Length: 293
Length: 322
Image 1 (cartoon, each protein chain N blue to C red):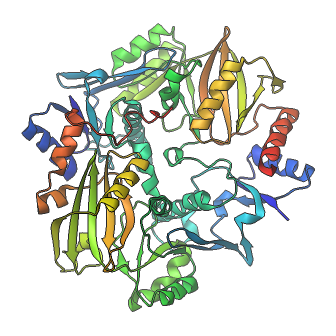
Image 2 (cartoon, chains in turn purple, red):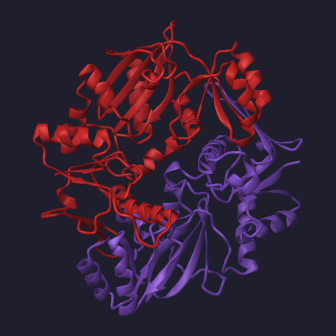
Image 3 (tube, rainbow over the protein chains, first blue to last red):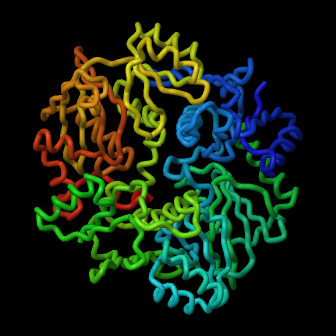
């Protein structure tokens, strides 16, 4: 009997929703904590000008990807606890296991949601600085940003946007701090002694989540309910980006500021935070329709 | 103006700067060592996302539109000055953040970049790369990745005792033949999977693609990993090599498919004339091959950066195909 494999974290609300929804549709879901998928497994990955064997055995049970409708990896970077190993170099172990994990995900013959392109292996979320390469092809607007260590350029930017800016490290785009006062700005400037700073225009307005599932879109408003108030050209731009990033399932954060739509981020591992159960179920239903078709 | 990003401690950065000097091509060298007195600004020009950059080191100031090409070597930044009150881990995060600023700028740069970091990431998993290589018509060796000592021993027997082992990731490891002394260490496999490969005997060939040109160098050595021949008191002889047209095309096609303008491809030619491909290096240190054979690889790379040769390879922009 076929099932779905979820490689994730018990704290991830997407995993919880997915497991419940699978049960609702009478489909077995196998959940493996992403941090110990391989630690208790024997692996045998054999190829000879093409894959001949791809076996993962946990305990006595072989995990054969053919038995799954789909695999849902919730991150591409696994973190291993080096204390579990009799070795000094935990970092090397992490790098090696991750090299295997990435190849394993790309080699299994069932839908992997998402099959992340190598270019984005280290990213969870894409920010405007990652996405602006798409800008010439789209109607969607992007918040203006600056990356600099030049105090006068940063000051010009901060003043131009009337002290309404956001600081987000490029390496952690999901973390953001409002820089909306001279005091905060002065404090931020102190770090340019050591590194470049990325400031982004603060876009205030209604935040919508747009979920793209292959070529279908589902918009969720700021209250968590499904909405059909997002113009078709915006949905079509989101689908365009998702297609070019090879994403089967993605979440776009769009801010509606005075009827202008700004793309602020794209999540490669969408979750359902801020969505009602009804909205989450509509989206999951579409995912299951897709993987079972 | 050409932009060179990399530390002068790295011999490849030094070689490229020297070659540009010799050819009298204008360039600006940026040391990844963060210097608060060198200004770098990259910003979007408006809500439609187009970007511009201004780079200033000392009195030299250049804009993105003046740059014809970028050559980048990313290495671990060794800060000359320690950062007060920051732990080693925090310093590493600060360094990574600074490097990310340049990486993002280069990803969006609308010209030649050798090579864009996102395209180079496929090398982080050599086994992922092997799967891509086999799609280009090359022979790839029998390979086993396992953390099971028994399975490794079985593979050794299947390959008649001719097996090498190496890392799975881009972390450099010395390719080593699996021989008796290593059997006692197989128990450590449980800590970390290892890549075992049948030992392919034949002539080592390193192919460098540079734009539309191919430079093939053959290496005769008794060492299993010729890069470390000196360490094991073995010899290595490098000489220029002409690839059959079909193999040359496959190399070019492989390099293009991975998005590289410049790549280093490791091949082996067996006695029966088969070409096996092992790996594609996105940031090849071709200095050794150039020095040993006189092949003008860095000159070709310099011309690509200067825009004085046209070439089909390497995407001008990561999303040219849109």
